[in-house]
Image (cartoon, rainbow, N blue to C red):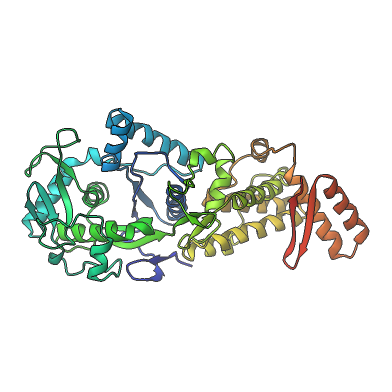
Length: 460
């Protein structure tokens, strides 16, 4: 099966075919570094990390770039409020972001360009857009003329009124059209700025990504990713300026967007006090459990973060690592061909994480039932390989259980008892099943029998 992805601009799922299979290019919008990363920032990092792993396995060279926006009004505000230099703010939060994502098992992209390192590239692209008649300078600003690009709006599917209402730009008198967006804007002496043909200033948000893509990945790329909130205006504007700067050449082949993250059914916001920082969550749970929880829903669907969901993720990993601990004596061997066929098919079907994880648990169950050392070795390799594509199950089981020890409770042992009780019930050995239930009860665990199996929870 070939890799299929939902292409936002086509509004359909289609086979992913890169322009050059020997050099696949992917760009994902990274953070604006004025604060610590929250769980919503972590979702695209994890989602596109899995896609990166899949691409690397399927194709030759993969060039993955994820940028840092290190010049922005929010950064300026944070620096002014804290009374420290802007560069100190950006360096602090770049390092924090890299550390937090590493704790979630996110691989370092091949490239991590920063906006401030690409000011000459940005100025050059703006000059080209003016020369081609797609942009105009006025009052120290340079704006993109959306009427010069007939395809404007194709990505978001918004009509003109929605574009104006939804854009994050000022409806200023110097604009030819209210929807025109800023490519360059003037800076006051107290703000960061660079010399340009239009006066001292700084770049607009959208032009930054287009310039960095051109510099590092080329005139046209295979995949551009990010959260759904970036579809308009950011990615819509990228398409306009990138296409026009390159004389109509296709800017990007596939646009891939992940869904929003809510917290306990509510939108994250400072006013509600429910903005969950990754580093705070790492104080309460291992990074791998946070990653597993982020993979619990299909990437295009909303993900509702909850304490219960994180607990379930930890228990799920307890089960999987528990199986690896049970078959730890099996030799290290290559994965048997075909054993991961269903798992890989799920991932290649538009990154169907829930289906892939269900298959991971099926493999774990089969591994526990395996009777020969050779079979256990095959399933051990399969679990490690499958887990590797998801960024999971790469630790030694003993290391996992050491870091997740909670009140002396051995969750792996509980899973074994629950499995043994289910097995006893399946052969109508109710005496053994009742004995195991009593043992679980003594540990403060209750078991609920359901049509799809048994579930357990702590009562104290």
